[in-house]
Length: 116
Image (tube, rainbow, N blue to C red):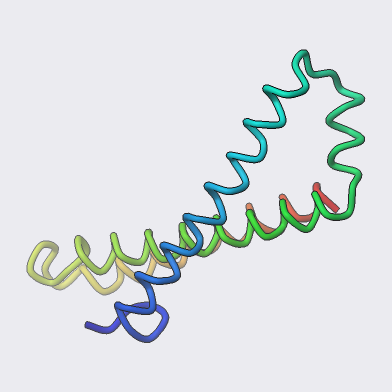
């Protein structure tokens, strides 16, 4: 079956890799919170001022965007079909994909601007 990245297998692998990146990022933050409790603004400001944290956060954000993009595409390819929606499926699917891709891109760029 054809996937958004060329093949369903490639989509599957990318989703698993992005999930591991997101798990690593959240695990890091949870451990950091438990080791540095109570947290204060100065701590967070100095933490996110570090270059390697900005890189790690940027990789997380890119992984999250890619993971979400593949997921929303899978929803549209599974549920917005001719069988379920008739002749309106193509325009609805196109609008849905345009809207979700736009939201994902805006959120990604806005988040990267905030981080950097």
